[in-house]
Image (tube, rainbow, N blue to C red; front, top):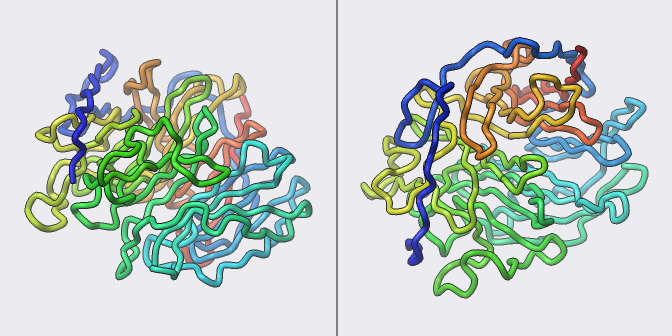
Length: 389
């Protein structure tokens, strides 16, 4: 079904520094070199021997927690010790792109030791958000809300387009980015949790009362935005209320979207009666469809993960939005203006070519950048990236 309420079309203003014309989905910009005055970066491996690590988070004590798509949690302690975190993944549905995916630590983790995961489960099968508590010694994790949020659809045959990123909004809400399961009707169907960004109370998993579709006939109360294809990243811009989604595109146009409650981001591949990947990522004929703030154009790069750099030590890189690159190698940097519109894009030189596919870049609580690779066969690593001047 389609939403009955109108959604205002966001106006995309492209600065003069961006010379490319907008596509049907949104603006692109010429890929440039790193800006003059950019800091040199030191890159070091802090954990290796991993297989498709999906996400990385850093606790207030400096410990890194990493998950792997096929199941498993690993902690990197502040002294450099790498250890397994014992956890029950007996019901994990790990097929194709789906498995153990996004992680988020509770904002009060230092007090409550609460962790959130988004993962495929064999019950259904489906995708669920599960809440855990982590032992003080990082030796184990125990499910405490199983599930916190359930009923997110999964593609049972292939695991395709399972999402699934979890992130805390500036107001403390838990956001969950989902994939469309490669089912063409899902993104525009407000009765489905697939192809959406959801917004929930992290304590209960319940929809928040100011969500845009409460009590709408046939609509899911958890839905915050819709019309998404496969949300692979959620990034909160520091000191603003801005939240951006990072999404895989079809034949053209991966996207970064600035999220607005109730907005439709225009993915509608069901018009021909099949999952039609030749249609625009944002359908310009769909009433109210909001254009992206960045599009890859052709070819696509399959961006995954997203994080903002913050801190004076990052110099000319301060404020950049970083995306992992899955189809090629490396990390793409986007500079956005205050309104969230694209100014320039470039690849981070020190992360180009040497490390393969990048799944997740994540700014740590210590100000360093942490990066997971996604090459498989036990060859993956977690990188620590710091500016050196």
